[in-house]
Length: 119
Image 1: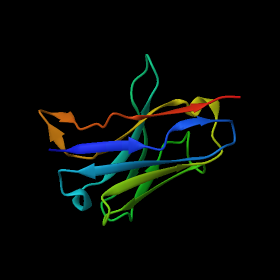
Image 2 (image 1 turned 180 degrees about the vertical axis):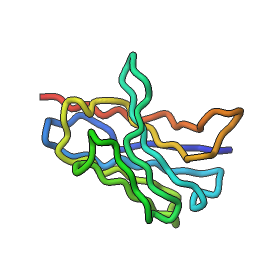
Image 3 (image 1 turned 90 degrees about the vertical axis):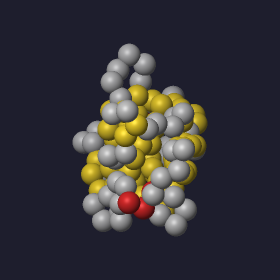
Image 4 (image 1 turned 60 degrees about the horizontal axis):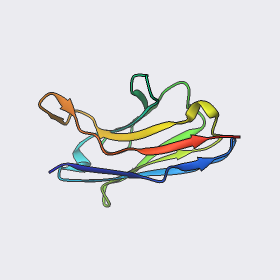
């Protein structure tokens, strides 16, 4: 079955950095674009970044452009999110999800990893 395991979150001060990882299994990882989303309590899940299946096309939310970098390793079925110059507004639970892979019309999600930016 599809599994997505996010890791790398934690507590960091403003201006700091974190690198998130998402280990995927149970589907043909290299055939799917991958996305990072984030969510804070009471708000909709927000798309942060997307990377195409081969990594040749990347898009970012305006709020993270120039600070976050998405990458992937198809040999390891892993997608990464390097987050630099973190702001308090980046505090959220971060999730990865394959684009276009659905179960009963619903995206697959992992358990998420908490990122907290505090001063």
